[in-house]
Image (cartoon, rainbow, N blue to C red; front, side):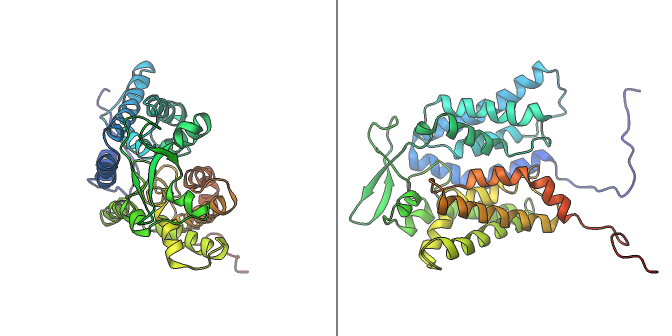
Length: 330
């Protein structure tokens, strides 16, 4: 009786893909933006990423040991959560921030709801929102320096928060305040911001890698970005100004959210039309937060709000079985 066989009805789907291989592809796709963040912001950025990943992995390991949960092999999901959380943090945050965030993401958001596949919202984003509420000042401390001659922004690699750099706004916040920013710098990542959100170019490359590898569908990112652009064109106050809309897309972690967090298998719809509805909802909600809210970003709150509505979206968009749901012929 020890060697039980799993018996199930057909059809049987065979695939070499596992959770571990999918998580591996996600980490490969995130690596360029993460490494650029370390290059851009220095040793503190590396330490924030390391602490975030380590706290997530250890939290999951210790919880499973304490609760005596058996494991059939390591699937790397905690590493991805830690990497995403670290990339959503400023290099200036105190070192306890990624540790606290990692514990909250894994223990509270993931494991207490049943572990992998049972969480109802993205753990990394839930942890970031928790940290923004509980430690808002530390979470929004970005050391940047304005270069007036070129109207660009550059990061000062300070040893600690607020020592060498100025605690100032990100380029997106500057745009909202009526100041200028450089689209070139925002696209390639030479700006202030969180560790992994600054380079829209590298995040776009990573997203394309996931699409080409068929790890994610293009439906959610495309619907998200297009609906956001349309909303900002209509209600952003600048009309369909191409440069303004491009800066809105490149800033505020929109690329990171659209390709890497909104597409999370567990917290996004499984139906094709549901993915499009979900993406449109995120784009509109992000636009509302940016236009009407006090923050210039809004991506994190939009995605976790959308995560809560996923069961409803799936219920509405679930395809009907052949021969079901139509009027009976009398």
